Amino acid sequence: MVDDDEDILIAARLLLKRHFANVTTAHRPDQILRILEKNTFDAVLLDMNFSLGENTGDEGLSWLKQIIDHDPTIIVIVITAHGGVALAVEAMKIGATDFITKPWQNEKLVSTLKTAVSLNKSRREARTLRHKTRELEQSLRPDEMIIGESGPMQDVMSLIHRAGPTDANVMILGENGVGKELIARELHRQSRRADAIFMAVDLGAINESLFESELFGHKKGAFTDAREDRIGRMQAAEGGTLFLDEIGNLPLTLQTKLLTALERRQVTPVGANKPVDINIRLISATNMAPERLTEDSLFRQDLRFRLNTVEIMVPPLRNRTADIPLLMDHFIRHYSRKYQQTPRPISPAALEALTCYNWPGNIRELRHGAERAVILAQGEMFEPWDFPLRVGTPAPVANEEVSLPLNTLNLDTVERTALEQAIKKHKGNISHAARELGITRASLYRRMEKHGL
Image 1: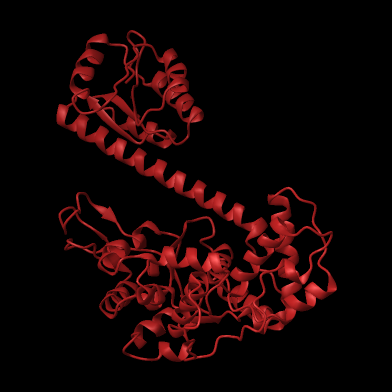
Image 2: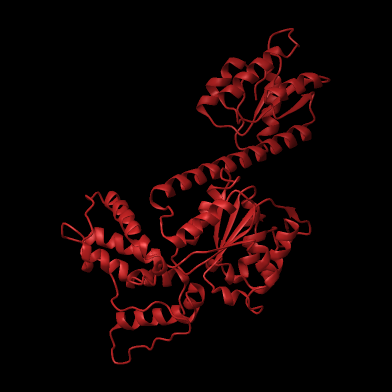
């Protein structure tokens, strides 16, 4: 608070310190910038007149301009004499957020400041979120980009270029590891919401009992452990893109609520009576086979039609073998830089082996293989044996069962085969496979990484 009247500063300090953790006062305006440089404040209370006999407010407006120039995002509340509404309006044109009049009412002063502090907190969180989003986008471009010149990938890119600039809902289909989230991020980058948040939610990693709270938010006391209000992911993605991965894991009851939210463009937090408007673009993805999405017992058809205004089928790596040399070269260069090694060429024999391999784990498996080769290979060029290729591994086939090797007690072999059987049985649905194995999704991913699956 800046005011030339020491008595006013003392009175304000005694009042405000009961409501705020830190209150700093200054009786001379020439102290303002020095104080702002050394501290971070939620709000500034600025008197409009400082010189004896001065009542035009010109001094205050001059200092207000300097404060705004110093920090354009700062919250400034100006203090004017009773009836100085015109001066307050002029101050707000310059950048002041609000005004109070002398003599003020204590309740009004405290209420105005609490609102200012809340606004400043929201602005900071929004700036931080935008900054993190930009950093994430920039960090993804060098090593997480869509690479492919094959016909199937050109078809995918054509759909992205046409759908990206629109606000149409997009459903991305494809096996695990094909890069569905990369497709979603590229759609976001090419949209009018590119400067806003991209929020990815893995529905397979959320406990079913918490789905509704995570998506729609909740009010304090809505359920056990709901100790404070919390906004859901749909509100948190306001103005940007919400990516719901593994949408096939959403229970039918919540599919109904999601459909209602999309149709009304409103969400109702758990425990609340009043809906909240939302403005998001929704992109969803699933590894569920297209024919299974048509089963009413698994997925509401009206929701499917709402989600797949545009549907993008990402081809498995075995159907775009022309891209394998490009992808492997890209990842080898990336990991060579990461581990400070000189990039080595791939021998013709290795390139043939890589191209002929069916890659059941798709790009995720290829990337893992490239990293492993960069770390462990000892020759001047990469050879077939530098890559963890499972010779003779067939491509995934629907309803194919794998028998556990009862003739061996080797734990690694038994574990690997059990993982393969569970994953194939559930057609790549990691959540369902983990549930069958009696382990968590995170644990299953670790074991898949261990065995190169």
